[in-house]
Image (cartoon, rainbow, N blue to C red; front, top):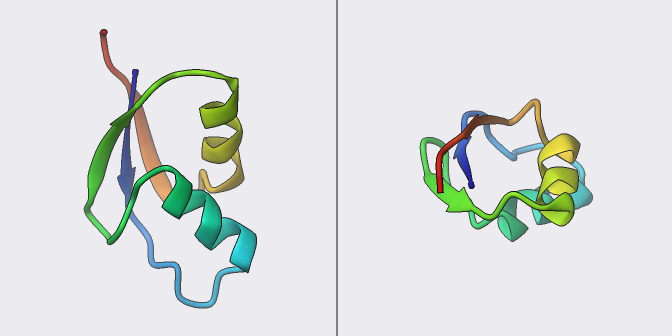
Length: 59
């Protein structure tokens, strides 16, 4: 599992980055969600890594 926290605003970001953050389930700065660690999720995380913090958590 991955714990993902949004750290920066989406204002002024391209539409694909906004959609990636939304697909991860994040809604606002400081919001944290736990997501499954798979290739699809890793791709979303890599696309917006400058906007979020990620930590690996045990299952």
